[in-house]
Image (tube, rainbow, N blue to C red; front, side, top):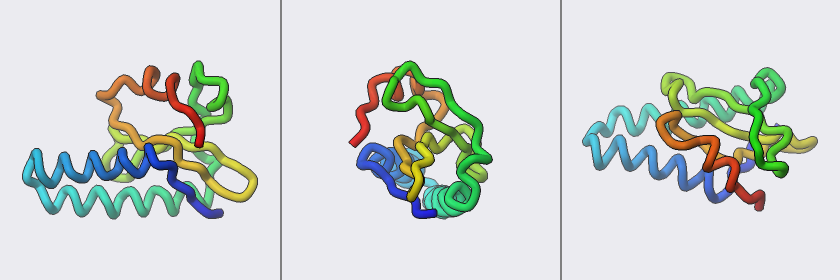
Length: 108
């Protein structure tokens, strides 16, 4: 199954990558994070329903699922399992206000 990233989820990956690279000055971690995102997306595309449902107050996200990024378990993919693709809505660190962010999310 194909994985499609929304703009917000692409921005989330870029933000986290830059945090490791620029803010923490950990280029090896930044590269490992980017690879972990790829590996996690591949795993989700193979078995999207293995991810548990995630309850959101947002009616647009009633079928949302979440799965941790491999090796970065505090960061999770939040995605919808459509018939022809997995739509990644956000990729968020647990220290962020995930419920509020997802509650305000608008599907593209």
